Length: 271
Image (cartoon, rainbow, N blue to C red; front, side, top):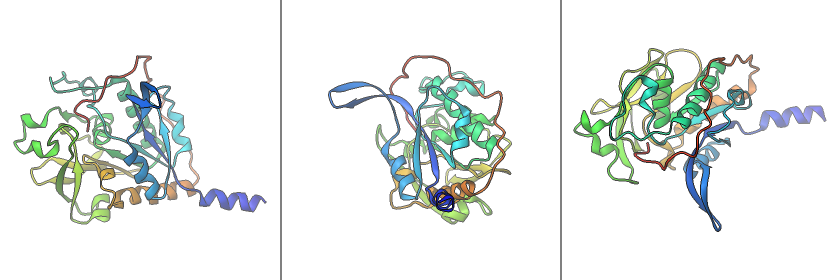
């Protein structure tokens, strides 16, 4: 019996945490605030062979990473520029409570060696969590920026080149494309990260850790292309390996705690 239980544990799907956010929602006769994640993220994890676990943005406990084989920090509203020492641009819309949650989980996953996939806002969170900064409104500095957010609720398309000896090059080859939706981007890249993909206009499209755990941040939205699961498959392979390997976890002691604030505002300029 013990042998069967052990085999079942090894055969289980990798457990992938997905960050969520507070948003107005409707179900049945109700309309209220809910902790949600767009379904395409969930479906992308399932298609790649993972078991999605949703992490609400309240009551953050970084020890939850001990239960995970991988973490996805999803897209959404802008990171509060206070997190990188800047004043807000008029076009910046943030949810500070969500920032505390996502930054704390990002740091905990990196510290614990949990494979991390950070998407759009998630890539910005990764950069800020490690000391980097952001361009708050790309149209101010890039005449091609309209392609990244063509219209409210309409995804753009970005083509990019990848760097040799990178996760992106291994999984996607030298050139690739993806849906995208963002009006911000990475500016100063954290020392712990290296740029591994750029759009033709120079916009940073992917960053990875220089050393240590498997961590990939992408500025685009691969979950919106259901025909291409290569990046999610790469995460799942690493998560499966993480699940098979015994770990001695050391969690950070100074990660930000989540303040007790009310429901966050509706999304605006979501990435």
